[in-house]
Image (tube, rainbow, N blue to C red):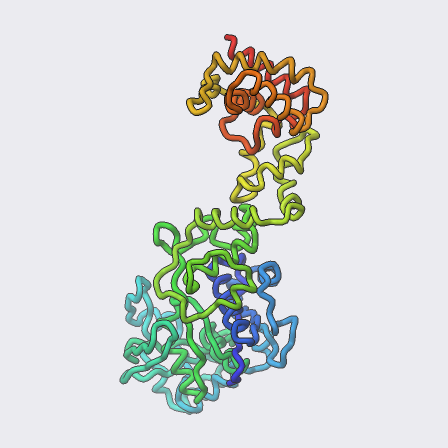
Length: 485
């Protein structure tokens, strides 16, 4: 095994990339890069039943978008290829190593048919009913095995785990874990279709590709003794195991597709920024030495220490992610922000207004891009609103004072030629000074009249600048007519 740290992300092409898979990829990337090592991409497509067309493209697209650039992979041969399991299978590598185990007595042919397997006893492990194989075919003589093979009887190759003794493996977070061999099933290594199982191919590939650190979810802890027995059977050095905590939803249930935000692409479609998602996922189970929460990818590489990964389940807090995304939006370059915001603005507003000024108003007020709609819909059409909105205790306004203000400023606005924000503000400020009142006393009723909303992304004069003179005056007049009733 290499002294250089080598990690791998080995996804199965089964659809969109789950948040848990992306976290594994991120941690594997960070562990390698923090140590100056190599990060590899390997496609594990041996489960043909679950293969989804186009899923490999999703993997590449996600890796590129998140900046988790691999040093080796199907498109970057580093001398350990092929990097796709179905292509590796064609080289005969898995059957070769399975036969080595058979010769050592560490594996055996199993010819049991479906009916016999269904008759075997089952046990409930972690809520799942599993079948424990009874080693029936281990007792077949060499001649019986050869006879069945010659007759073309379907078979699988099973791992031979002793019924006595224990198996121990070491995890960097959980320490030494020992299990009774009697609790371990003789798992299938080679399936009846000739394909290796996920578990077997994983071990063979990790060893032959010089992987030094294996990072995966802690749901694989129960399988790790079987992996360890394979390493021991081959006489191979074990990799460093790092089992990550479960990611749950706010109700402490496993994060599922039903949550609506379980995949990376779900989150992008909901208006999240890639950088914010990566930053947030880094904190799902890992914490820095200080309480800092905002990290660029380069900063994560410098700071990431896998010993600070927690064993406790990580809660995917959607509200926290939205807050973090809002912080990233606030920090965005305006032109980059506008490029992303413009389609959301155009989806709401069909009028020819200054979209850049609208974008500037909402930039610091949204957490995800779809939030834009609720902030700007009044620019398109003045909503129906209650005149009770004109009453504001802090501004010391009510329907009567607001009517007076609107009637006073209407001729000023009608006479106003320069309808820019600054010019409008100066005009209204002169009126405020003349009347000896506070700004809010005047601005609140005007803002209410032109927006019909209690909360707006900008002040009265900013809104009027975007709406333009004709529309602003018309809305002021409507406000007056509503207050006069």
